[in-house]
Image (tube, rainbow, N blue to C red; front, side, top):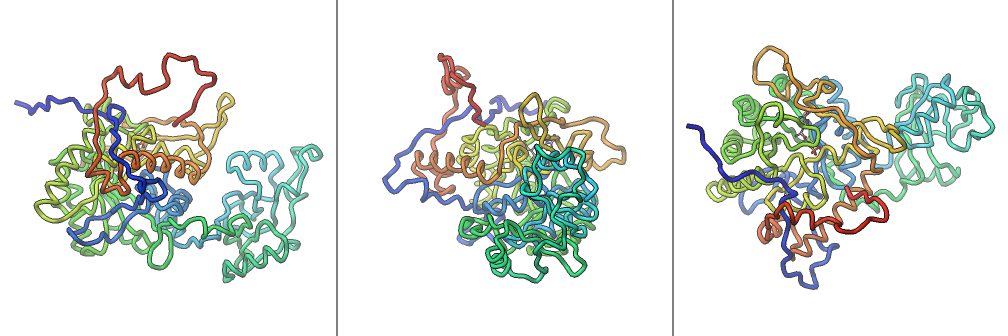
Length: 500
Ligand code: RVP
């Protein structure tokens, strides 16, 4: 007979935190959100910690090099998607590691034969008004000129006019060579009253840009997640098929940590990959595994050598695994059950394995709940897909800006390896959808707002650290009726509110 778990599984929206005693020392600015990313022995420190408990999902629509840089600046980490060629993924990793604070890879580039109309479309997509004119329209093409909003007046010029006819030509630009330091670049900017300084190589190829507005960057980002050489840290998603080629290439490119990206992690395939890493690299190379939703899955991956374990099946905003295959578990229950197993494992072995709650975070308070339930950090897809820094297009739909967001199990992503059970045939059904999410602006602003809520709630619970929250939080289930009570009710709202 099958095993029945009679208690239903619940999601975050079905729980609330009760306040605990907060002393006058318990204020949001004293809350420390540092959290372990990889396993460690009792009494020791983890080899890698995050400065905020956030990672961005291993998805084409979420985590590329630009997202990784933006999130590392705030103290979190991206896992760059593995559903692309090894070369492309390695290039993205390398570009994060090569990133020099203050030196920005130009993301608004155009060819000189394009028109004002093309330029306006590009500006709408990227939100930037400084555009590099390069031989091939890429960020590393030969620099031919620069266009800023000072170069043209919309009301005066026809939309068909070509960029080459009004751009500031290369001969008239002030540029600096690749070897320039940030201080020297800033001096050039100030002395020449520039807003932006293109950095080029000996062949006039564009390398990066330094912007006047980024001058104070380092003073503002004390939280940034950096390695010993002061480079941003970045993770990489891998699969259970081409790991023996992908892992060495990504290590060479500078990846700091890996995560086996699979919708179902309680499988021999994951054990094989973990054993490969331990055999070839010992404990030097860090690797997380998942996803699981119960204690059995956790113990299996812990014993196979995972550095962290990722939890969640079917809770992602774009995920239809539960509908398609009938497997999964309410995300809150999955976290609670896996955390129980993790704590028991820690008690027995002295090895603490961080838990990542992956998918299903809708409101900001869900983050605090997941942490209170014992997750050490979160992985978010929809949340980050809404920002300027996600790789997808920003589209105006009926007067509202939206960003594209599609699942790794959708036909669009074609990431069949994520759902691979070792057979040769291609997957013949989708486990994810292709969708839009409301555009929400800059990552920095949104992360600051979300975390200010997390800090504030932690203070209400009397906790200044995530581990204190995990130990001391009081959590209650809520009835369906009291969920209605928790939102504005029995009033006519003056205007619609957008709180996500
Ligand atoms: P969310 O944050 O709710 O958008 O969920 C993101 C998570 O959803 C990912 O980290 C991954 O675990 C899962 N995912 C990604 N693609 C798909 C799918 O196509 N079903 N699911």
